[in-house]
Image (tube, rainbow, N blue to C red; front, side, top):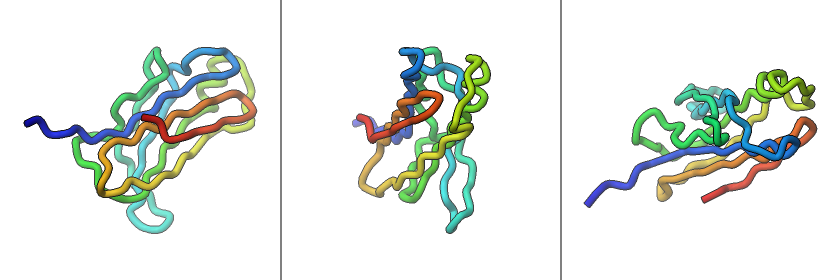
Length: 117
């Protein structure tokens, strides 16, 4: 029997352009104590706007995690100014769960997120 793969993933859709946001720098960090963060991994979204696996291994310890999206770089590359130069999404991973998909719906003046599947 194969072991389930632990995963943290994201997908960014640019609502202004009506397409996936490719090339966005993304960092995954884990809170090691109140207000102190440790880098887990970094990546850029692929042409489909996805980072399919942000964990650097198969371990997913329970705890608080943060996705940091460098939206300033993305919007600058698309010649748009943004109100949000960086977006941080903080979420809690529970011991009993192994997969977290955190989508980001983005435009230059707003964003929303939710827990995907």
